[in-house]
Length: 299
Image: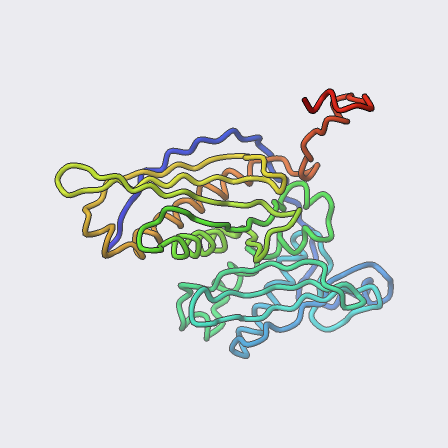
């Protein structure tokens, strides 16, 4: 059974259009300039805990995708300035994903990107279907490239989103709604943070269930996205009537549909904001020009 939610979006956005560029080089040939110089490049390792053909094939597709982003990449050669990109399949039984981690030449982590595997057909994945592997590589490559390219960072990378608390959901259903939002964000290519920090956005939600005639209830979900300083940057409001039995007995499916729909609106919201200047801290009294030595301004 599937449900649909009305999804009015209340947002104020700033457009920022990426400009694609292509770096031409045959992906299967070794880049001798990289081997002979100290130009930074990325050594892509086979994906751990994936079928053998998939592990190698996905690494090859990632090399191709990075080269198309003007990032030197290779499978076998490296120099003392080379970075390393690893990929690991993580499947705890649900929310399976690939954890891509970029390391600097000293082995320190530069950045991490989690790409969802949930819902991927088993046969094409096990058989290293080229189209499927290309889809994964082209989806992750811009996020990896952005860690080392300032211009790409301005065009592509948006802050990671930490999914915070959901309040008011019936039958302690908040965690299900949170999980559905995380899954939807990863599926759409957004970076999802596991912990909040001064570099992450925070998404929260408040659920209200109101009685309606004819044994129905209105489920209203107010999502809010805030910066690390608590300033709200946008809202997504969802509301739709359901039979009481659906709200009481099928909340898991309802939450899944709501979370996936909200993720689409959230990605649209965040991707249209110009993040080149990062987060802007709120002004303090000193910023406002108050230089008085007493506490007059605090009264």
